[in-house]
Image (cartoon, rainbow, N blue to C red; front, side, top):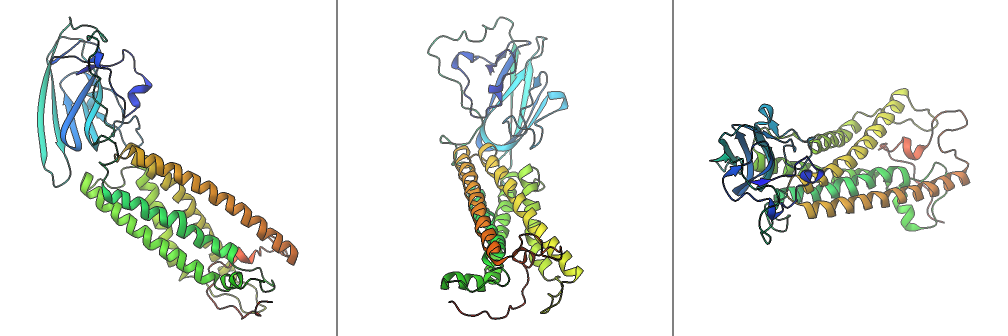
Length: 387
């Protein structure tokens, strides 16, 4: 048992805080009515349920990190705390009762669905004459590190499947699928464009559809593998019934479902118009839906990746690795946005030279064939070779 600040502070929301050594209470005692920090240490990183016969725990979130978007930690009017994170040492802010009574804390902990349960209890007696906070002799060692991780460096406690999940999802949603989508917009030549002077560019333009299909297919396979790894890791760490319990899980599941829908949706496309024919209403409607779902999945993936790296930092025991991954991903998104802007400029200039409007033709219909027919799989007529 340690003292806590007399009033709630922002520091109490920081998982890796350290309690001053002068706040230690060197006995199984507490001061009635005062705020304390209860230190719970378990042999192996795991979750726990703790109840107190009196007093109130402060709500710090189910992961004891100040965030409640993953679920509340307190229950029963603040007399119970349910930690849903695998940590070895956890700090809980507890306000003692005003009455001088013995308070019992009972803890039940588990380290996974195959790890069984551990139980323990401790009792603390009231002592009105406890020295005030900060009166511990100088030179006292600092208090224990908070619940940020199960290891000294803060990253080794993370399940390896979560690490692999992050790499697979990054490869899928940060590289393969975005470039697969962009290939349909930027790799295909505008209608009526002459052959490119570069053999490499002409090859890419001829094979834009294969590039679109293969990049997205590989990306979806990687995403499925990453999803299975995450599912397995949650089973190991939290047990059955603990899926879809976080914002990241919801964003990730929605992104994956939209991604999987795209190849299924491609099989329902209406036939493309023949030479000299206009597109049917069904074809135009399908193209709009296909494009919208593709971009929706891409936008959701950004939120899923961001919340995933935050979960690695604040939930799954990798504060350093999660922060590095979050910074790298944000930098990558900005680079892709810059490259997209440059590609848009080149695309606009090429269409201007060919007299093709960006978003509509002379009849007022939406044209922009680079974008409209991104999922057309019918073979195009052979074009003349490079000049």
